[in-house]
Amino acid sequence: MFTGIVTDVGRVRSVRDTNRDRRFEIETAFDLATVDIGASISHAGCCLTVVEKGVDWFAVEVSGETLGLTTLDAWKEGRRINLERAARVGDELGGHIVSGHVDGIGEVLSVESEGGSHRVRIRAPRPLHRFIAPKGSITVEGVSLTVNEVEDDVFGVNLIPHTWDVTTLGELKPGSRVNLEIDMLARYLARFQETA
Image (cartoon, rainbow, N blue to C red; front, side, top):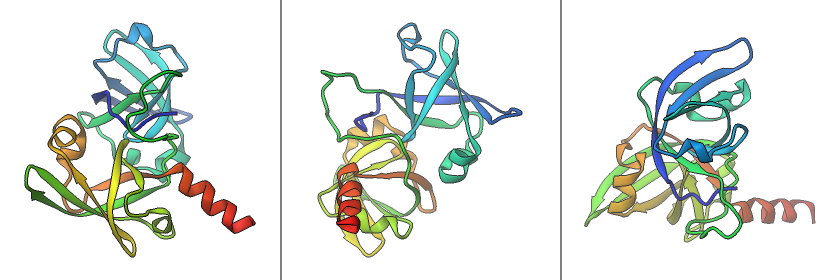
């Protein structure tokens, strides 16, 4: 489990297809002495398992299923990515409960300055859009955000200067593809209503 609060922006140092999956090596400022092999780390909102590590890098393997359902299929060397280590019992829950299971890929429609912040409008894939509500939570590229408004399959979020500066969201532009995870409570409520 994660909180959607990014704790490092890593960089893809290598990408290699293996006979099983695709392997990414990620450079990070994390103290890797405290990261176990098998640990879960959120990568732009996608929970992946550490399979190897060095002094300032770790490796993950990504299945074809994950590549097909996330933006990871387009990752190249040098790409910056939002990272978050798994939450521990007793940690501050600054964002919202995030599973690290990407629900779909959204498309950025616009990015506009608004005071010191930036307003970003994103089109969510159908039928995922029905789980997004004003003042609800959503995870965009692994970042916990509050939904400001929703109009059909388009929703808006406001990025404060801190979020803009310390995550990869400051690199968004119209046409950018982003990993989306809907609020876990919305998912279970919808499932309950469907089966009740």
